[in-house]
Length: 450
Image 1: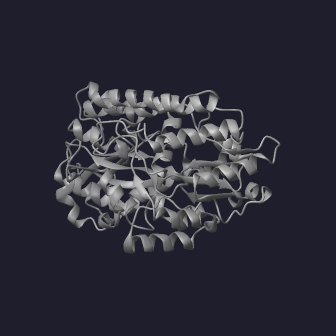
Image 2 (image 1 turned 30 degrees about the vertical axis):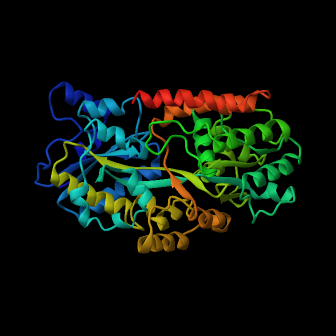
Image 3 (image 1 turned 180 degrees about the horizontal axis):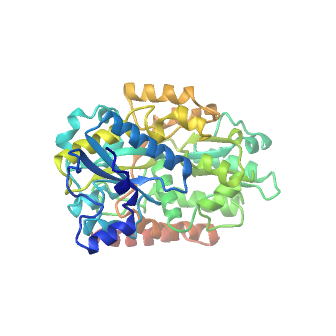
């Protein structure tokens, strides 16, 4: 018998009320439901305002429970899936769900404060886990122990406008492969006039630091040392990043006069047909179409220029340190069915996604390798409703790049690097060497504080 009353009533407000009265709250409580089933609480159910995703997630819970009558999944809706303002408080206060959403960059923090269950002993029976890309599995591995299961991933690449490429006399099927080629293409696109910008980059709200990181990776450099203890930005690779941006902005005049851009700016610029290129992950494509009036046929993806590396990220689920062995086993079954089985779940049921009008055929997320990846790609291709040929270069080129995660203390470091990037884009007389020296010193300070 389903306990739909508890399932839908356990909101944040209810959790607070239960906590105040001393009753078990919405986090990890007893492993057994009142009818003998193993109960797990899971967050990141799309909120009701996201009507289609909310409905599909609920349908998946019902289907899963029908196939696994010994498990009761209690889903909590939320937007965003993780709120930085409440995340640590929920962990410390025992309010976190049994199976909870995290970013890759959260792993060491959650493990470090002893709030994550060690999943290593339970992975043998998890069929899809071994086919997950190694770099993504590593994101949830600390000192040889596994603490999470990846759900989605992204890597950065060069998003460009095929129509503007054609107008500028460029071959849209041969996108820039080096930063020198990006610079040349940007000049030609900006030369079209009418307010057209050849290349844009972020330089505010930590997004400039995020892009600097992707760009230095593409050059073969790093933001921090291999042991994570010292900064590494004051390097030939870091200098190449800032010098290239400075020359594109002030010498080539190919980046436009408006600076201190963030993602919403580039979405609108690309959607209006006034931007040639910018760095992004493939999930920007549907946003440009839905939010900024863009057209799928105009938008294409290439791998990161430079050919050496790219920044990757993603998300997944970790388990509450208080979860019982029964809850961990049940939670892993849920994650395997929902996210690790091609064709299942509200993110991977491609036929259903296409029916709902969602884009199918984007090059990422691409979670798997081997046979699981082959099956996943086949199902995706069968239901594709976007021009997959526009992403062929990205798919082929990405296989040759070094996939690198964000640095430790990423957001603090990005704040520092924001200053360096914004300086070269807003001050023609900016001193690249001094900016890198200052950034190096400040990042060393951040890392030294632990």
